Image (cartoon, rainbow, N blue to C red; front, side):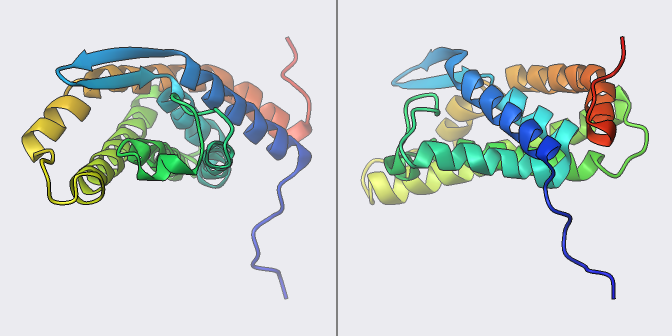
Length: 203
């Protein structure tokens, strides 16, 4: 009887996942702080590399990549944009880190089974990943800020939440979607060749 278990990760798979973990970590340090009233919103390249992990590695390996990244940060390594540690879980912005996982998973699921992935077909998948990223981030922020941190005190309203944590960065993050799709299209032949043969594309 044929085994229904998922195939084990190969050495190439592990190297590819490790590469994207490193890129997401590096992306955390490539950031711009956007002051909006009393808040300061971080715009970084973590989202870009999370999307590319989904586009190039698929749902399973893309999500595994982000899970490893999150675990590294939660055990205390300073791989997040503002440090690391378990205390991040009760920070309202931790939802956006979970959003990286949602973005990689959704984008990978929507593109991995397609034989021919064009820019036009991949961009909607990346946009769906962005929407899921914001849903995770905004819902988590609202719950933690209003019911954990303030606990019935002065919280944050939906209008203010959207103005600060969505409208300020949604368009720039869509730009990262476009960039992720473009770069992934250029890198996909090389990734596929390495996956099949273990060797890079001949120049």
